[in-house]
Length: 330
Image 1 (cartoon, rainbow, N blue to C red):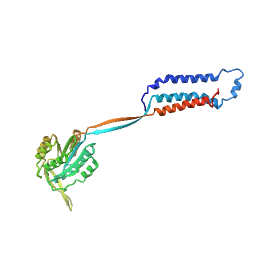
Image 2: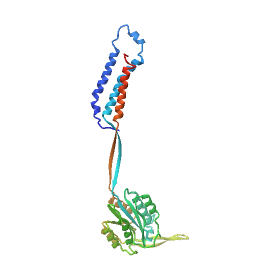
Image 3: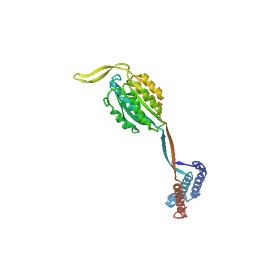
């Protein structure tokens, strides 16, 4: 609650002081002048309840004045609401699930497990952006269309595993698939985040053609190369005496990934450990932040009639008592 005209309380102070002064004066007058010989009689007599009640009548008048001043100050209830408006960003995450993502150079997990964990954190950090998920190996398909339902995206990301499509690395197809997901979007910003650990070796669309397509549609592509250069071990199954491994050499086509990013106005990043990958997604999150505008609205309800009614009842009660049961009582 608030008062629309709080300064009226200051203006009412003289009137309140006058009422209090009048009350005190009436009490002094009612006490009278002590007479010799009557003090013993007065000591034995106690004032009646009517006499005490009449002396309290000015309190009702004072209370009425206070409530009336409060009514004139316009007490109001305040209901506050807010309206949040934002121009969200549409984001498609393209995740490489080729066999080389099994490489265990991101200990204690493999590359895919770390990438899924970091992407999950990125998804949870968005507020008003639609997220979609594309996966690719030798071919590409949409794991989740653009949506604001982040728990659904996270659940579908968690279901991503190796062997969903034939092996290979179809980077051009992944970009083209992501561009198709974003083509009909009316968001102010549309981006594709592509994460891979290899070089394009599958699919009918080459990465450069796909990058030109993204540029023509106004879609920015951020490319991320993950994994350490050189030889890494990849598990190839369970043998009688435990998991067997084979050594593979990883080569990331950084030149092509950088060219894709430059063509579309994005950026290329390199991650050779889990911490670097998490930092990259933090950077992308900062670069592609949704602007949220919050407008506050206040609705006021007038309490003047209620306060004025209470003041009127107090005044009527004081007048009725003074003219009725307490009339003529000293």
